[in-house]
Image (cartoon, rainbow, N blue to C red):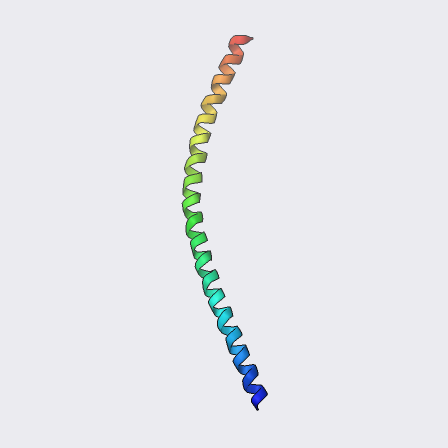
Length: 69
């Protein structure tokens, strides 16, 4: 019976360590999800800005090419 109790203590200790690490991992994943939402908003704004300016830039290059030719 003594061996059973020793195994039980070791297993409970291991389970507690795993629970703590899972909890820490869960907090990290939540933080990552929040950070990604912020990044998604920022990158969307940047992409919209770039798309607007790219069209203008493309038109200016086209106009310059027409003047050269």
